[in-house]
Amino acid sequence: QVQLVESGGGLVQAGGSLRLSCAASGGTFSNAVLGWFRQAPGKEREFVARISMSGGSTLVIDSVKGRFAISRDNAKSTVYLQMNSLKPEDTAVYYCAAGWGVGWKYDYWGQGTQVTVSS
Image 1 (tube, rainbow, N blue to C red):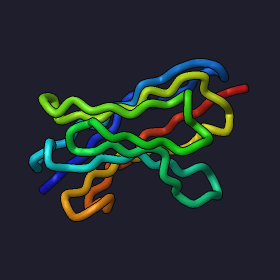
Image 2 (cartoon, rainbow, N blue to C red; image 1 turned 90 degrees about the horizontal axis):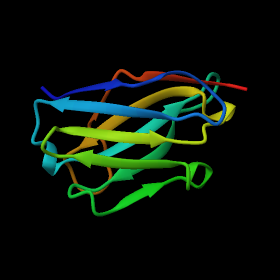
Image 3 (cartoon, rainbow, N blue to C red; image 1 turned 120 degrees about the vertical axis):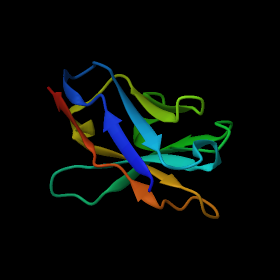
Image 4 (spheres, helix red, strand yellow; image 1 turned 135 degrees about the vertical axis):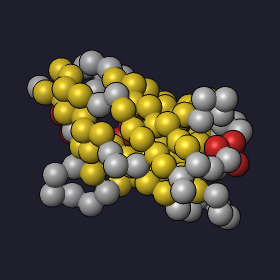
């Protein structure tokens, strides 16, 4: 059974930085595509960033481009989300996801980690 465990969330002032980590177990990590999603209060979950199996291809949404970066360490079975220049609108629960199927589909999700950005 695959498990994903996020960490690194917390309370930060606007303009600050956080690095989220997501450690995976139970699957062949290097064969998984990985993503980060977030859900703000009263809103639907939204895609934030994704990374290919090798790490050679990444994508982030426009609203975080230039501020957030996704990376992975296959030796540690961990995916990261570096978040800089945080804004209050980045406040949300952040989830990592992993998929072993075709394309960018995600089969497993973490429990989420809260990120709160104060103004």
